[in-house]
Image (cartoon, rainbow, N blue to C red):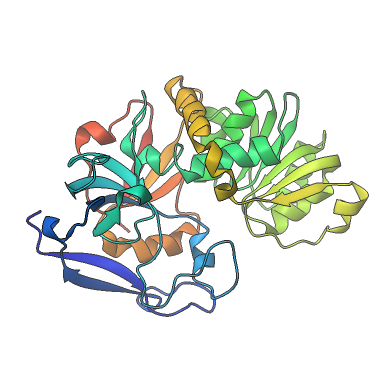
Length: 350
């Protein structure tokens, strides 16, 4: 490594409501670690892409949760995919690709046991390690199959369907023989769900007549609802649920029609993907097979411009800027590791 300095993003203060660019986080520059700094089993990891995920806002709250909050002054937590630039680990030779919870940083000294090798399947690319083959895809897989118990003939409704998780949920439901209705936030996203991903139908929740359209589209009532957003869509779904419907709660709910949970004997269950960590290998193998067979498609919204763009990109995530997986490009990957004939990526400088 010839780089003498590196940048990282740290939590400066806890937001009371929304993240405020320039206040919530601070960008720091430090002396770059060297190969001589490594201990046995460690590697020098260079981030190529950061994963931006809805759960990140919750990690900033100083409250009890499934994972400790990010502390003031700490590097912002987050998954990255990158390349090993120096190594004292037999498992990760120099030049190999890896992924892990590295944080918002250009460089990091990482124990090898905290990283995972990246194996790129046919029709795949390196960023799939953060998307369809990463926690995003695993969340969709276990949420729908283990919690939602989807089966052939089910009517499945997915909110946030054009996002990274929702788009995979809908496609797995189709693979399993279900009828799928997707809910998204723009007409372009609705077209993508219908025309490219094969959803049976899709609706724009911003349409003035959305409640009526939702009622018409759910005339057969809902067997499985995969919720990524909560709010009005969840309330409407509760009013259209079949008895003993399964509601998979992946987003943040606020309920009005909660009495329907009782009257319709709805099973509403939250879940954390980490609970299924022992089954990650088999799930990844199945997702990789579906990807190779062309049964799962995906899109990425990649924010170019380096680590400095991460804070604003996280704000924009909650405004729905992305179709599919939202990533920040910290350092461009080599062409042969990032290309794919079946993938679609949109780059933006925000």
